[in-house]
Image (cartoon, rainbow, N blue to C red; front, side, top):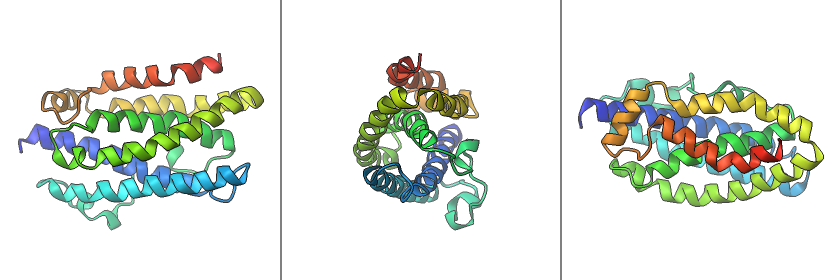
Length: 210
């Protein structure tokens, strides 16, 4: 495996695995705190899915010959490369819904771009994750529509808190490396194309908030 290909896989893998693990932990805080029993049960299920996805992704570091040691020994990881809103508990249910609609959707855009990856360990694992993410979307988009009518101002505030960091997360640190990743067919979109796909996906949600 050439170095640019290896580096691009590492960049994508770190972003996804860390984000899914931390998102799962944040979801987990709402397992008994949702506004309805159904919401709490869904939060628990989504937490399990995200942490499960992370547990599938982290071992892939060992498939990359020159991955830094701190990445291959997952139990030693303490410095996660994630947006700030995944490092702290959320204040309200509108925060939960905003993150599940905005950031979880951004992660799904990345997953969809990896499902036919030339890195076989992505392409063999991603389809199952996408099946589970479909249920997250149905649940979170439904709640977004409800809150856009009943708690519009609070939902707007929650979206504004996480939207810029979500776009930054999708940009990846090394955009040139992402272009090389696309050339190597590791992923089928570069950073700018990921952002465009994300914005198109959530356009209807943003329109409900004017």
